[in-house]
Image (cartoon, rainbow, N blue to C red):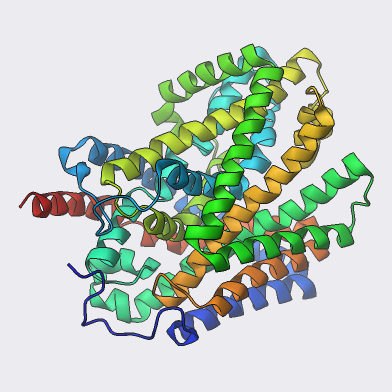
Length: 514
């Protein structure tokens, strides 16, 4: 079976002629418009974004909760089916080892925000518990609830929407049927050729690309702010715009070069380095930090999470709180969904449907939850033992201060803090390189986008982050809120995966048995 049928001609892969110019123009125009409005009138931009945020949360919040819950449940059902043994990607054996494959997958979501939030979110829920639990903050009872709530936001549902069902669809339609490795292909079950060649596909691709740009520029901008804060705290280097520009510039150079070298070189190597350094630091904290509390917190927090999984996932009691927490995260992850599925499809050739679902929707979430327990759980343990030791620095939702307040209380705290700054930078670089790569693929409709396109997106996202940083942290914060608005059309693109992935697995299994 040919991966790309002869009936689908096109420009030479890797050439600039292969770029989808209308999508390129629309998405590039969005970047210019958003940044231009932020520079001219941040107040006007804020009003528009806040209005869109409120509308999105009000009319799509419940739909998103159901969509993520259904995606995970259907994925698990597929994984336990005998038919899920079918191998995808038109390859008989995997292209990458399990470690290489898992590293590239786990470095995406965890890098996109997990490093920032691992210290801050458990502490936030510990100080001000989620309304679902109804416990008193700053108490031992609040610790399990805090970890369980963080587990929900960074656990099974979040990961499942990033590439379980949608990866199955894209791998089948691209590698078996020769359709583009692009978001528009997810609409093929409904619109057929109109989704591939008509305006429907054009709108789908542009919407998903804009959502990923917004979702990736946010962490890049926050990294500039956080590392700059850390450099002043640790080395006395002035926390100003010049330092932030230097940090973001170095980051852009790193992830753009990695994206240029491709999946088999830069992206793979950077991800492996990150996983090794990350697990080394986590191992040190686990042994040198509050070990008993971490182990107990993970087991107890996970138990609370699993026991309350359904009511927590579908909780609607306090819509105001939901909008700023659960629905915000769901919008962020939904925005990443289609392009993350493209990336996972590219690195998962030769893997079974069962293996992909279990890695993405079960293994990666558990690793992420353990990460949150080691970092955030240590912060809770320090705060319980010495009230104010973390919460005072965290006041005003200061994420970098919370992380440094935790690492500074560990043995060799200065060295650990420096290594965490390095880890955070490389983590964000792994998101930057993978998203730069898939943005370019989505523009080019093939697996080998032109180098100038990769450079454009890598540099453009860095420049967008710098423009927003230059007008203050409020610019980056507004982009974070705008992520929720961009998730509205993307969530509709993801809808066909609820039934089509199941159909594809059964169909391919029957064909391979024959």
